[in-house]
Length: 320
Image (tube, rainbow, N blue to C red; front, side, top):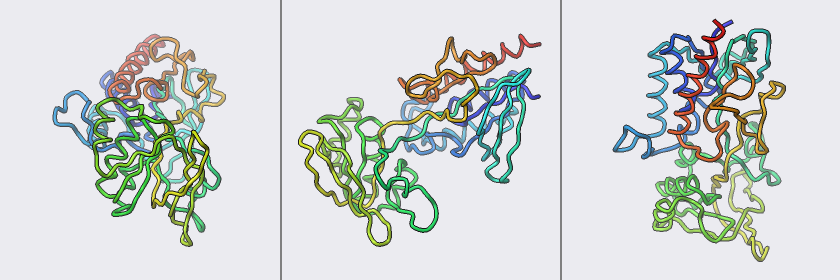
C-alpha cells in the first residue's frame, strides 16, 4: 500500500504533488483524460502571480508538471481513476490506463481528489450525436475554443453563455471566425466589468440578447450549418446561420467515480468539505474546482492543493 494518490492534473493536483513530493510522501498523480485540466484549453492567463506579462495556459500547466516531477512525483499519464472505495488501512482505486487498455486496483493510505469539473451542455435533442465517434457523427459543437477554433476560419460561429469564460471564448474565436455571435439568455452579460467592456468593444463580436438555443441543424455531411434561436421573452424562434457552436454555460464537477465512497456532495454535485480540505472521510481530501463553485480560479485551486497536501502529510504522520 502506497502513501498518497492524487487524482487530477490541474493546478490543484500539481500543487498538491509538489508539496507532497517535497515532504517525501512519494505521491502518485493520475492525470486523467485531460492532462493539465481546464487551463490547457485557455490561451492567455494574466492573473496568475509571478507572470507579469501573462502566460499561456498550456505552458503554465507544463511548468507545474515539470516542477512536480522534479521533486519525485510519479506522474501516470493517461490513467483515469474510475472507482474509489474504502478498505482497511486506506482506499482502493480502480485505475484505467487509457494507453495500455488495462484496468487494475491499487491501494493507497490517503487520497487527494482534484478532478475538477467538465463543461455543461444544453441536452437538446441530437446533441449527443456530436460527441459519439463513428459513422453518422455530427460536427460543429464543442466547449473548447482553444482546441477547435482553428477549424472555423472565415465562417460565422456562436458562443453560448454570458460569463467570463464565454467572453474569453468569443474574443479568442475572433482570430479565426468571420463573425462571433455571443448568445445570452439575459439582456446583459454577467462577466466581470473589464471583460464585458473588452468583449462589447470587439468589432467581430455580435451579442444576441434574451436568447437560447432550441436546436441544431446539420447539412448532408453532418456538419453544423445553423441553430434555432428561441427568444426568452417572446418565445419566438428564428434561424441563425453558423458553422460552429462553442458552449460556455458552466461546469459539472467530476465526482461520478465517488459513488459508494461515502463522500458527501452538495446539491450541485460538488464535494462538501468539513474543515480545510477534509471530506469527512478520514484520509480523503478534496481540492480545486471539484469542491469549489464560487471562485474557480487557478490560484485558488493551487492554494487548495497546497492545503490538501499539508493535511494529507499530517494525516499520514499520525498513522505512523
